[in-house]
Amino acid sequence: MNRKRMAITLAVVVLSLSLTGLAFAQGTLNVYSIWPESFAVPMFEAFTAETGIGVNFIRHSSGEVLARLIAEKNNPRVDMVFGGPADTFAAMVEEGLLEPYYPEGYEAIPEQYRDKEGYWFGMAQNPLVFLSNRQFLEENGLEPPRSWFDFLDPVYHQQLQTADARTSGTAVSRIMSLIYAFGDEDAAFDYMRQLRDSVQIYTKSGGGGTVPVALQQAGAGIFFIVDSIATQEKGYDVVISFPKEGSASAVEASGIVKGGKQPELAKKMLDWLVTAEAQSVYAQSGIGFLPTHPSAVVTPLVDLTDANLFMVDLDWAGANRQRLVERWIDEVIQGEEF
Image 1 (cartoon, one colour):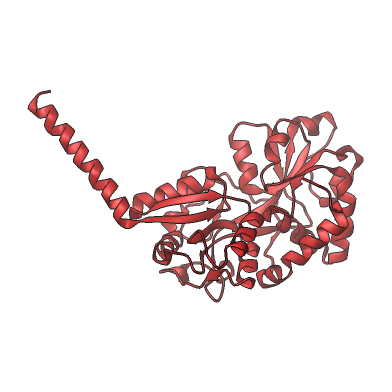
Image 2 (spheres, rainbow, N blue to C red):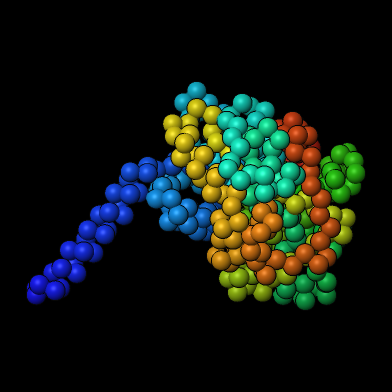
């Protein structure tokens, strides 16, 4: 090896060691991510590039994360929870699982997207939508569904996939959507009992049914828009539509775990997540979340032209989450196994 090539090689080695040392010096944040890997990893990579802080994460659905945090309350294994519907975070507050913190620059986030006591803040919006297989619609002479009641048509018998409320925050948002859309809890549960005949399977995760719909193993489903857009972006011939009666736009949140070992690193993550630069990563990565920061770049993948969206009262949601899940189990699936 000549001297010039040796010098270049040594320079690369020194640079690599310097970057490794920086990441090591800054530490590694331990996280439960409710967002799936395809959404979380671009965010964590951008955070590490910006701060030098590494991220070690485990992905679970929101119900699983809540159960784990309750079980680990006296000895938390993670420093923060990343992503997931804010009603789950409201339930965490009820259980005393989160540590309040006001991130630097949090005032830029509109009040409806952050907890007034600083236990969590919303970094994205994520409306519930209908996702349909286009070939299924054409074969049955159907238009894309525009009403919750469209799914009670016999043509949808055993053709729907949607999430299980025992494990998924998507399912809890669906229950709350129906209560708001119908204006009455009993009416919503009456509808859900009728809908049961149309449901082929309740999936463990919120987006678990999108691929079966894409492959026409199911005709349609009820999912968050970010999972539905991800399915479209993979090239599947599916259609996104909104119920005219309305659906919830979930606030996707993050918060610091009470008693976590590295609260300062978790604070740095939240300081970064409230910025327009961080929330612009959604659009840059082709992820269909709507940022809560007014100055962040919004992805053109989201079309809300026909949307009738409403915000759920998150204090009410946190206080009633478990009761509603238990009622759904008792009245809708009646102890059915996964």
